[in-house]
Length: 125
Image 1 (cartoon, rainbow, N blue to C red):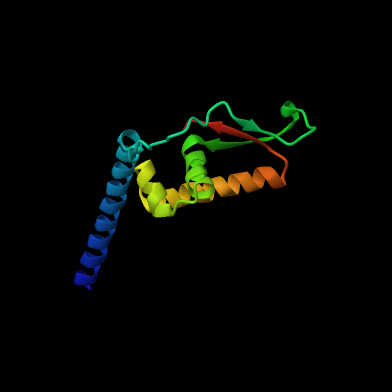
Image 2: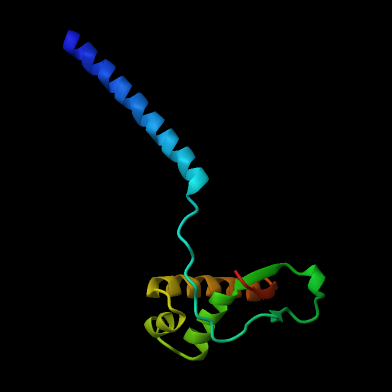
């Protein structure tokens, strides 16, 4: 009986310290952790100052979809120049999986803009 009570007390104390440790780690991380630094990406063309919109609708009445410059470069390399993802990723100095995420995001945004009649703006990240 005494061993069981000591074990329960030990588990409660261990659980309490675990909660305290997570709280301290969480608060410290919120102050100091910013995430991983973004890699510089090689972008060969200037995609700024380009905007697309549906015909016949004033621009101020449209919703906008923002495509970032690196997503636009991924579209250019993969779709316009017909490069494989690995070659395109090497040109942009990023990993193939990052390139795949960029191209998937850009395709989704473009499809949304075309189907839902939205304005497409290209911006720097």
